[in-house]
Length: 310
Image (cartoon, rainbow, N blue to C red; front, top):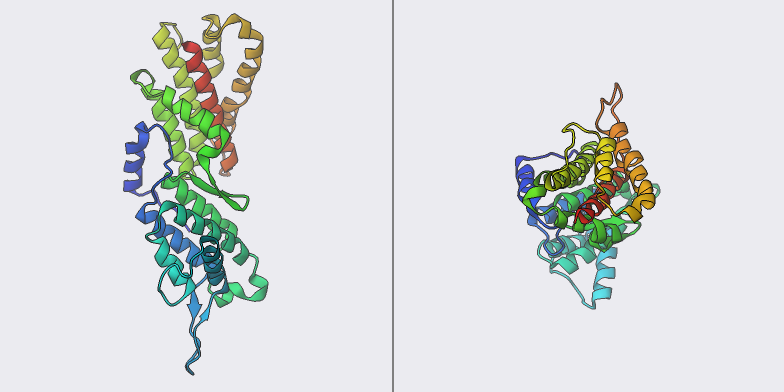
């Protein structure tokens, strides 16, 4: 399904630019609840079909009933709502459930979506009017979670909290915190824009903006220190200025060679190859894992540079 970048989304991204994290973990918005429900119905199928004109009961979609059975057993309850069919009860409950219950059901729904994606040989897809592939549905769920800044993703069969990942907790959030000041307003805006592009699936733009935030951080440090530099300097030239002014202690010179090499061959090279130059006749596709790597690499360098400047 196509993703539209509505005006309200852009306004919300701008309002979040001063936050201490790019995600939150405690609130599920009403639009997100509706979006997840719509994706689930499309990927798992209708909740039931008519039993016919002879008084036979409706036939329920076994995947929806399976989700409810597992959830009720694990929670120690009989029913989650009073609607007629399992799928209807799940949908109704998720419209008002607290964050923990909602996430538990979301994980079960994601598992059912993947099962539905492999059941075509049994006629499940046609019988229950399943649309699209399971993988595409999971990709959209993860996109909707990111776009809503709810910090969870479904990966490798489980729902994961993003800030439980070491790289986010130890690198991305500290980078945002260190950039929280008027002297670093420019690089902070670029860094948050990079995450905004990533949440929207705009991976090429995310890579380019991550590189910009790193370069702007170096320039901000130079301005704070009063170190002259050429305004249009490339990353390699900026690193020469940092080294000449002993931004890091001398005893780190040898080990810092590897960091310089990583910066020069890592993030800027990603940006040069995949984002900043003309893409040619055939559009370039930057995978999400490349964009994530660029964001994390930029964040780690920003933390190092600002801490070293102190």
